[in-house]
Length: 170
Length: 112
Image (cartoon, rainbow over all chains, first blue to last red; front, side, top):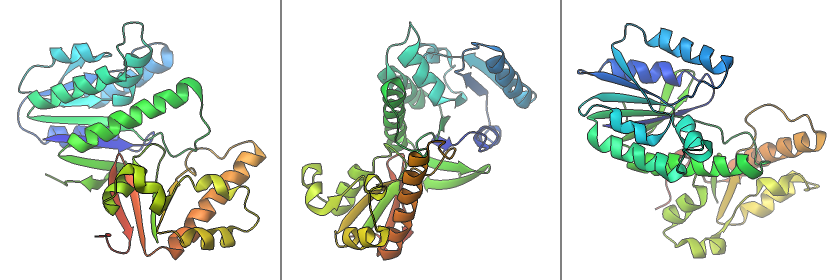
């Protein structure tokens, strides 16, 4: 089962995703994609770690798609979040472009019994973008669409609640 | 008229072509898109909505999320775009919103 969750900032998508994965039997792996560039990143990472504590997740750090290979086969995985993974593949010196993020997640979906991917709704704030921001939005939207097409279920998260666009509650 | 709305790069045109059963190259025969960009310069939004509603398919990008722009012209353009979409939705038999390439029916019946 491959689930894609999209939502805006602080829409409750992480809590919802963790809750869904915690209801599954078997080992849980949290795939962390954020790189700690500064104190704000470190604070965010600490907040997410505290929320996951005691929920039985092991963590795989995967700022780049190549590290997704470290996710053990058979695990119920939660990848958070696609927007970081895509940005890292596009802008990190070791990145291989947005296609690498898409290919990595598709390969992961093929070997996890349950994969839940969290991505960001950043496309409703107008169209006055240019340069890197425009390229990034276009690339992330392309990955979102490709994953949504492949996913068994897709929900837009609003106030922590899923609006199911495809499939539905398992 | 079928109104298709949704965020930027959500796959609205591809969805329209699929719903209508036409190839992408023929979409322009039936549909007009990026109508949100027409709103700011329109002297009369109602007249614009009436004119657009004569087309079989109208596609508008949602631009009203996020913080209200500081720039007065951008603010007015965004306001006009949102009001135009509401006027279009009121005139449409069918309204579909596309997110991540997936259409969701907001009004009316799926076109067959």
